Image: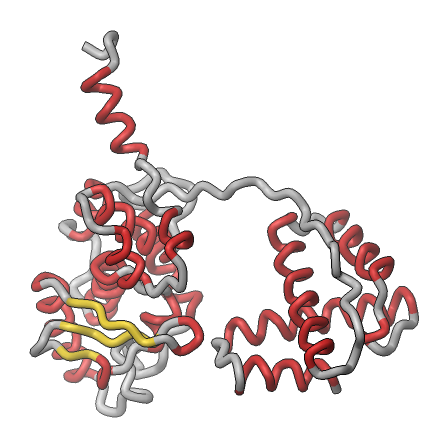
Length: 295
């Protein structure tokens, strides 16, 4: 089956992450099921632009956002490129396709005050769970890692003596991130407590539940969201906002954008530049200092 061959290609040759591969597979199967049910088009490689356009219209009419529709179509486009590469088809039905317009997504980072008011608070219970959750949130802000990178971090890639971690990012690209004394000390405290209560940790992982199991993405998301509800009124309170805050605060304090790019594990500088916009905090500060009616 061509979809399976494409998934093998993404796994073995492109070294995409498990989550990325699952997203591609789901998008392709969704389209295949649509074309079979609406057009009796059993072979996905025989699809034409008319069928794809009908799928796009159905997705939009069912309330799927333009951003998500564009991502799904992008999965299909990559699949057709693979079919051309393997001589399964001569040309892509998506050649010349124009993506749907989408609103620019503005993500507002947490302020330094919001982060400090949480990390310096007594909100975290005096228990293994509380220490785990505080370490998770602190680790995001002190390192700028992605959620999956935190979950998959192995103790063998954590060098507390030298104060560095090795992170395996997208497409298995490895990067080294230094650890500041505060997060290094917190990690030492957490690992010591973890080793006291967990006798058989799973897969050399750093972050584990109190039963020794790997953390789920949902648990990590909920941890960040629930705690930041206590100190922030911002709409979005996801782990990625802590990564955003890490980058924005570094740049606002004068860090070189190329260095921030390396810390984040971005392939291109353009991906990092979205964090270099002036934060609302800075805008307010400039207004207060320079606007003639502010005094």
